[in-house]
Image (cartoon, rainbow, N blue to C red):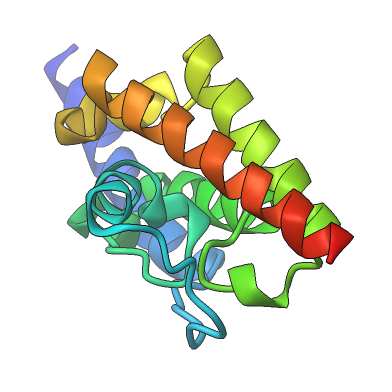
Length: 152
């Protein structure tokens, strides 16, 4: 039994070593094309709770360099950037900005964002009721301004 455990542990270590090179992971931060320009209080909340997955300013934690966790983190960031990228905000049309703001609030209000799995290791990203209200008010004001911009 002792021998089996020893060989199993050696096999696991070898598997983890091979995994580090078997599937390379892209951990880049492309240039910021056009930031959101939110008020400082809103910007601080978004940077703390959203930017790691929804911007080109991802802070890659140590486990983003260790397979298989690196695969999951890179996939989450890639998917997050595809859905909404605050670093490319100024490239979005007025209609797309409006839609994305609506989605931001829907996700926050429902508790879907920040994702629970992200909060396990990033407890500081949890949004207080006051922060949710701040985001709600900002979304509503920004959407109204976009309506005016689109009409004008």
